[in-house]
Length: 183
Image (cartoon, rainbow, N blue to C red):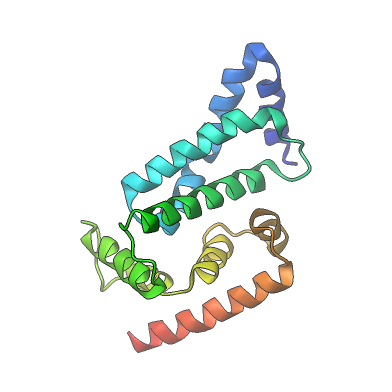
């Protein structure tokens, strides 16, 4: 475990410094978790809501964290699960179509509605292409490419074998290359 994370956990486990430890944890992980969530749920306000739920779960569960994995992989697992749960709730409420292609189209429409959207920029073309990937490939690609996670760390977060993750990433990259060539 990273020494800084060990210190955060030490602070958290001492009642007098619990809030200090949690505040430091939020400060350290708020931005990377926000962007991880945002890439999954697309909408800013939805990402904020999911992030709040993540930190509520972390606050409730941190006392039981056994330090068998890195703190940040535990946090990413919670953020990933909360994001997927959010997406499923939206599907059930009828706010998102259950059809994967329709979900991707909805995500693309949300991106295009962003005031900063400029489809001429490569970064936006990449984001639009990523939204067209199947959910698992999209998550794996985002963790590897944007969050620079190793396959071992992704395996801890997603509870999937490293081999399956490597295959998902490879397929995602090939699909993205094709989509970007076509655009």
